[in-house]
Length: 162
Image 1 (spheres, one colour):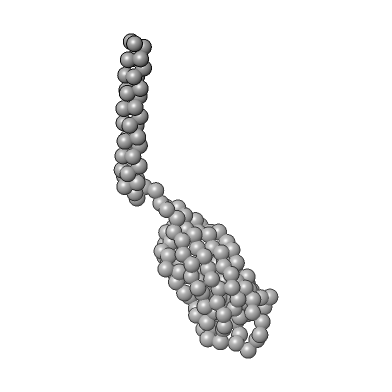
Image 2 (image 1 turned 120 degrees about the vertical axis):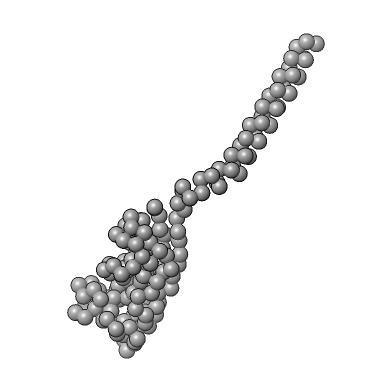
């Protein structure tokens, strides 16, 4: 009879310890997110439709120096309303001396952060921001000659860090 009493008391104590542990876990789960908020950066994501007939177009994302940015783009556009050839964000094998980036293919997707110098994005790239500003996109074409361009590319952006 004494053995049964010991087992029963032991089970009750174990049950209370288990209940207390569960309560502590719940409190931790409820309190911890608000406690850690601001200390853990969640990645920012957006999808932007970049039109061929517009020069620099904002993604709406403000990028800070040192952030890692992943860009993936797909779609079809062309730099000339008179040509029937559409191509993707990697551009076409033509080069214009008067393009935004003359050493690179016409039609390649370009990016810049704030007023920085433009850089090549193409259909996919990863870069670390060298400065602060809004992430912007454009097609590589003759400066000021975007009005006869057709099409669009959909650009997905993931920003990590700081």
